[in-house]
Length: 381
Image (cartoon, rainbow, N blue to C red; front, top):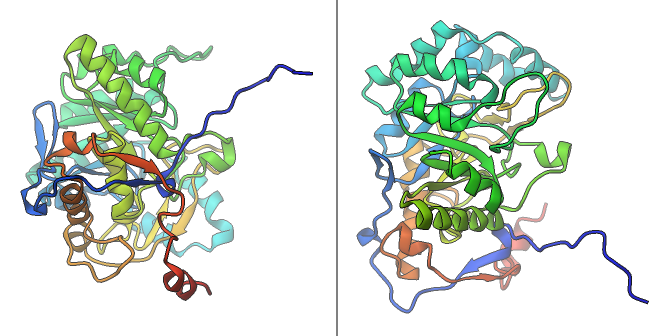
């Protein structure tokens, strides 16, 4: 006797479950174009540094931009709550594991100070770098205007999950179309992981969209809330929304895969899934001079009672230049990310990022283990 199904599950895929198929034509890696455009801004590498305190402070933002990428400063983090930000960072690093969650909750309960927002932005701009900042939707109406007056070039409105339709009895939700008009500069919004949500967000007038809910190394959303979609599927869904919106409006909205990217292989797969750029955190937290000093923690949406992020030890593995451009001193794909992208594009016959979107992708859960007996056994403790 047949019975009705309460829910029908769909299969979704992450980075480790897929592989790229080499092209019929190959290209010299140095002849590939990996530049990223966002309205009037152009970046030589399609990599954004995540708006997390362990990754981006003003000095890191300047250095990262001079290397060709875009670093996003969190306007609701330690840099805008404390004048002595370095001392607070050191305190987080030195705190024992069993006390870190309560400490982070306490640290992020300190009020945000508008004068520090202006100071941090001016420090980036005076160094000649492009300045991008991140705010949560609930604080966007006030902090975005302060940031605009201070001279930012780009705004990111970011939360764990962002939609155009928010229900609340306590406040009027952020109207993204109004924000875009008020700012009159490039606006990136996120995060989302579905076709329908992405399409509705694009129709508000934004310039870029962040894709990913919970895949970050220091993010606990999936464990605490049980919410998320694996990044390959999420990126494909949002890229489809981008194509639909482009057909109906003529405007191209950048899709930026945010989180879960650990190696060059992950990064390359994100672009083949439809990304125009990627946002990464933990790989950059491993750089010499990163504000987290070899640690990384999720705190983009602090909660007084829930551990919305965890501190993880990522170590310090190399200079920022080496992580981005090599030469690589390891074989695990964590260094020379830009070189990995160029080489993958060359092997797949893609001259630029849009051609990389067309590269054939297959389901291949054994891609990282097939024939790797000695590599796997040598890593077993």
